[in-house]
Length: 166
Image (cartoon, rainbow, N blue to C red):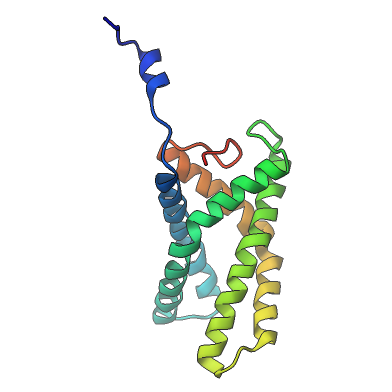
C-alpha cells in the first residue's frame, strides 16, 4: 500500500496543459492592458467613452495574441539562454526584447486597422508613429508587463517564462 506523504503529492502534481498556460497568459495580458492602457488612454486625452472603446478593442486583440505573447516570451528566454536565476537586468532586457519584437508589430497592425477604418486607407505615417511611440515607452511597459504576467502565472501555479512552462 502506498503511503501519502506531502513530498509524493507534490511530485505527482501534473504539469499544466498548454491550453491552461495560454489562457492564463491571455488573462494576464488582458488585465495588464486594461490597467496600464487605461492610464495611457487617459493621459492621451481620451474621455471615459474613448477609454472604454480603446480598451474594448485592445481586449479583443489581446484575446487573440495574449497566449502567443506568453509563448514568445518563453522562446526569447530560451533563445538568450536566460534562466530564472539570471540577474534581474538580463531578465529585464529579455522582456524588453520580447515586447519590442512582438507587441510593437502587433500594435502597428492595430494602428493600421484603425487608420483604415478612420481614413479609408492605411496611413503608414500613423502606423510608424504609433510603433515608434510604443518603442520609446517600451522600457517602462515591456519589463513590467513581463513581471505582471509571471506574477499572474505564479497565482495559477504555472512556471515563469524564464523557467519555461510550454
